Image (cartoon, rainbow, N blue to C red; front, top):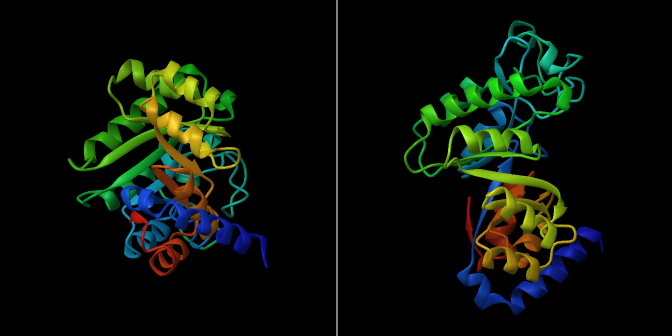
Length: 276
């Protein structure tokens, strides 16, 4: 038996033992970079495909070109996902427009993604501030980036939408807190949900924690909830991760395989109340 199948089986048994709790729990699953393992990540094509599959929850990454334009891409380096080279932050918008993704799509700009999202109902969208390497985003440039992103996103936010600004770089989150009080934010960490990361969220005044499943326990998630935190877990590379994250009690789960998870949930775990 493959390890992913074994994990699914073990987690499914655990879930069956907790069926009553699962029926009371609603977990929201959102498409990470538009579903990076099924589609061409962070492209309009990916977001459209996830939307067509029934998803209204998305995560994406935002960086800024040398001339101050905001684009949708995870890496600073262009090599992994495009036919370009060098750092995004050292290219002009005109230069970026010359490149294509490895999947043959144009690199997506923030205004194009926002146009796609405009007017859609029931949206949950995480806009991750990709402000590393830190030397590419000194304080003045960081503030410019945050201001442009916040104003652009909030200008088109539907009334019923949840739009979050997320980051593992505390600088950007602190700036948004100070400049735009009440901004919805999520703190990303490469650590599990535990006493340390719960305390960090509380100290920063952020009520959403994005933590890794690895090392997270049901007890830790329950403690986070008791402390008033909303817990989002990652990664989501397979249906097994979906099952595990649900068992752990997460409120939100990202997935790189949105179609596979939706199909699996409908066929194998119909008792779980899933919102996409």
